[in-house]
Length: 381
Image 1 (spheres, rainbow, N blue to C red):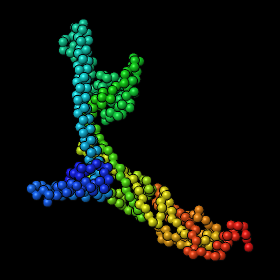
Image 2: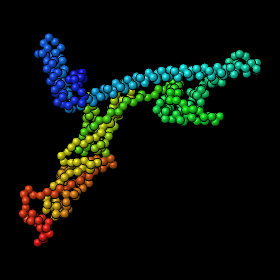
Image 3: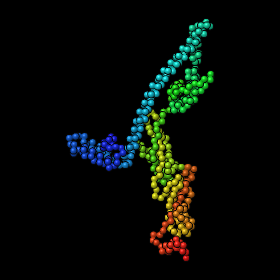
Image 4: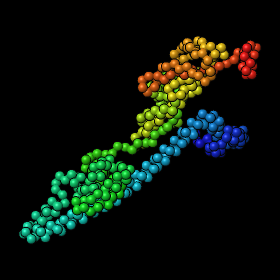
């Protein structure tokens, strides 16, 4: 199906009433009864109906918006990757030409210096040609030796430090290239392109290739229940691209915890899959409120129990428990039951915190009312 917003002619932030009005206007215009001479009227009318079905449902609209945003991100990533690859290809070709010219110039210079020496000693032409080869590098020369001969010791050190040719690392460490050489002179820092080229040469000699670049990660919200966390259930996450990813809940997870699922994020051709970051959100529960790994519940107590103390039954995740209410307990007091909360990251469980709430009887009591009146005015009997 085509973009439902475009089909209905509304903006992406359109309100439900605006979407409904646009659908009615479009449907009236393309209705088959109004376009009997148009064979495509039926399909166009159905397409507009499908667009409205998507946008009128908040959940379906939300899923479509996420999928569209992800598709746009994928296309941007692919375009950026293609452009970066083209720029790198051109830059690498240019840099290799420069390096080739430097190597030729170095060999020519060595040859011109070796010829007079060979003639002075009466050596043959073949011996004179052998001399510059020894100066330019003996057989079996390592990549690092070759790099050091052409670019200097600092470049060789950087090639060893950046075998994967990471431009970001090269930019961060380029200042290290400005080290003094054997004569004590400062060498200017090498640009990132030169470092990448050097690392590429090393990889070519060694027959290794860098690992593929990782695609961006995706962040989603994983709504779970208190019971899910208590039982450590496995939940299913519905992705915007219609994938279903299973998340096994573990000890140490609570509201706001972020779980990382390796390789379940954005998938792009030629790139390593990104990760999925699932942020745990605990659904509202009628019995318990979550604070960290502790569960909170409310227990209503009568006025006489608040003043005199007593016993009461309270619902816990492990069934009903009897608790003792201390005498003179107000609504600001709590009773803590250890080990009845969520699974923590230390192998134990949080607590169940029972919050006391003092309630009056359904009907007024004259004796209690008179007592409170006397206490207010300081008249004790």
